[in-house]
Image (cartoon, rainbow, N blue to C red; front, side):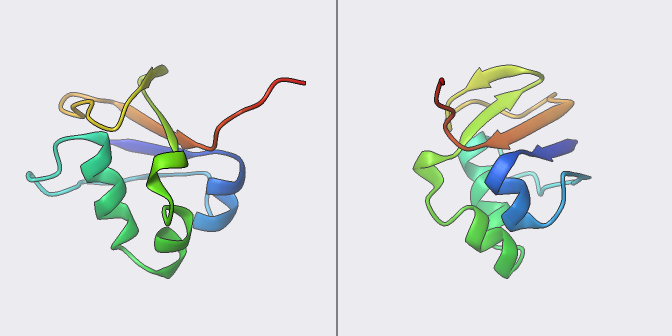
Length: 83
């Protein structure tokens, strides 16, 4: 699946997107965040406060308990403010 990173999440990870194949036990967005955070220092830094990270599956905002099965694209981004 394609994973996209936006704003400071992208800056911390060091890339805008990548294709990943998480293990079968990674079933939700929250699981994916944990798996990504374990991949290295830059990921751990990007996902150090997982409750502030927002996510979208195939361009639909979702919560951490959303299933990722069948997702083509998952995006991670910080909270956005109007202005």
